[in-house]
Image (cartoon, rainbow, N blue to C red; front, side, top):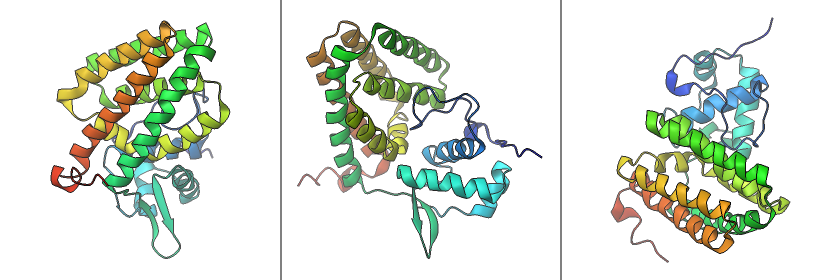
Length: 247
């Protein structure tokens, strides 16, 4: 009998989920991957909060799967850095410090800036067209205020842009680091007052890419990731906890 994954909560639904999964993944992913996608969505939306213990029995019942694919899914998320495994304490949702988040975003900003420059040189016209199509899908999700759909399309754009660099070491390092920041990047999208500004920056990103203007695209991407830290820091911790931490 084939085991099925069901998502009782709309927030946990993950149709065509794309987080740190490589672009172009099959629409019908293996069960373990679909369980990982569902858990990832629970984590990014704080239904499984930072530092929370992952109770396998409860989560398996919630997702209507056995504990075998659940455990394999947890291993996937542990490899991504969203979950921490301990021999004595089991699995917990990762809870990086604000300083760790800030430092990772600084590195990610540099990686994406370099990827943008390289993509302007190396990306094919078809790849640029695909990023443009994703951009307009993202705008449609924005118009519907479908925040999770918007975020996933946003991530697909960033991953496709990096893939357009055709630099394998850069793509791999970015994929690993971006996976660890997946929840944080979602949290940064919760700031309604800055959502229009993020859309405007994505318009600039697409324009610079289309014009093959590498230096301009690199500058925009650095600013874009810097804004991600500013927005995320407001959600992660009170201002007094991080603004003075500049050493």
